[in-house]
Image 1 (cartoon, rainbow, N blue to C red):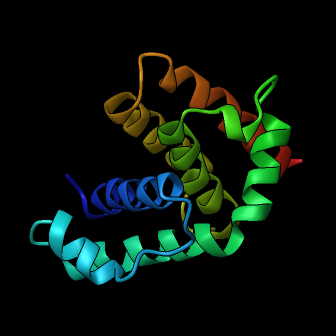
Image 2: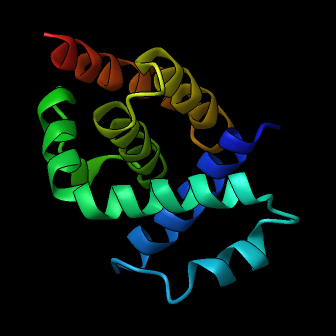
Image 3: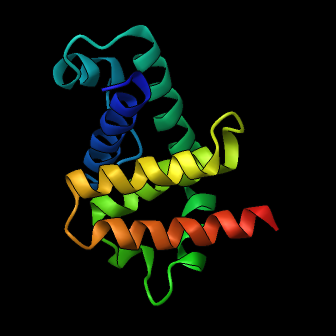
Length: 137
C-alpha cells in the first residue's frame, strides 16, 4: 500500500473516531498514529496530518458542499464511514491542487468499498462526481 493510501485510511479512522465521539480533536494525533499506524513513514505521517487538519479546519464548508451535492441525503443521515471518506476527498479536491480530482474520487471509492457497505462505492462516487463537476464550472 502506498504512503498516500495509508494516510487516507488512517485519516478516515481518526476522523471517524472524532465523529462518533462528537469531538473536533484527538488528544494527540501522534499517539493515534503510534497506536494504529504500524511503522508509519514520515511522508505518510505528514499527509495524514494534512488531511486531518484540513478536514477539521474546513469541515463546515465541506459539509455544506456535501449537503448540496448529496441528493436527498442530509450529512447527518449519511453513514459515518461514507461521510468521513467524502470529507477527505472533498478537502483534497478543494485544497490540494497537486492531486487530480479523479484520483481523489477513485481513492475514496476504493476506501469506501473496503471500509463501508456494498452501497458505499456508488454513493461516494455520485456525490464526489457532483462536487467535481461543480468545481470545474
